[in-house]
Length: 395
Image (tube, one colour):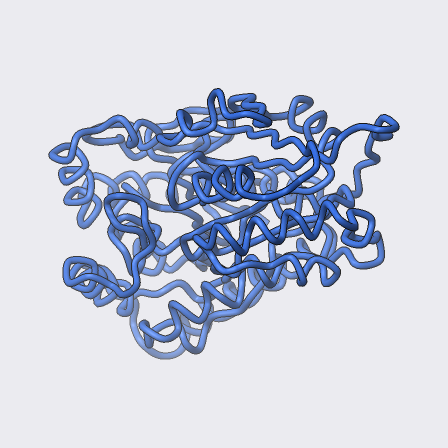
């Protein structure tokens, strides 16, 4: 099968777990004999067959942009005539059996509608809230979570979804029940074509033995921002009575200064590959204190595959992902006192919260089976549309 991926970013250019997952999925699909090409937003690479120009700045530089340039990016994201031409050329050249889109921020509506116009089967994965929120994440300008959709996001969402509803993907995959609920409550066109397929937990990785007498070590891996709860974690760590425990923080972002120079906090900056593996060997418990509706943070699965306990917030899909033994460590988002109590609870009985191998959920083999089924169902549905009934619009 020929699979054309669509992803704004592509490894090694990444901002989060969605593009890391998409890159890993492409590699795994090849092991099953599929051919994979990619359309990106201005990111080159060996897999890339076409690229939509990134305007007015590369997506991975969004954090450094002023409000005017960010507004220009959001405006361009509503309609990209050049993107439609790029997708047309990519489909013509690659001849995919199915298109699988992921995060499409910056590419405009064509990323989700052009495949239907060309009569190609389409699977779209909901990794974020782009269909509902112009910022992609249901957060306000200061990074705090939205309590309801604002007027501008409703207007932008209506414009996007009115067009997509006329040419929707045949199958929509949600990475958690939480993100599926958010979308199904708002978008009628999704209701007969959405299924939940959780991100896979990778093969179990053997951890290096912890040194005897080493202090309990908590870890945080991710973007350092209000939405990810890093300030709440630092405050809770300072408040809690943890008997000499440490906190290792890895990542980068606008709130990096809040972890520098804090007693007991070891800031490592961005880590990946062997450095990330070494960090997981070092920690006893991962803390995922997200304050936004985090759909399915991959770092939870990475910890679970290694038998590392997780303290998580109840935001988004996190409660669906933690091991059952860690459910007692879930805390409300942005609640410093509750998070401090969870840290103390873990320090009191750390051995009680380690996930066991038999508790691990779907691995890559089962995940690929589910994705293959989604591809086959999309191809069958597209064939019915082509044969049967409604003519494909060709405007």
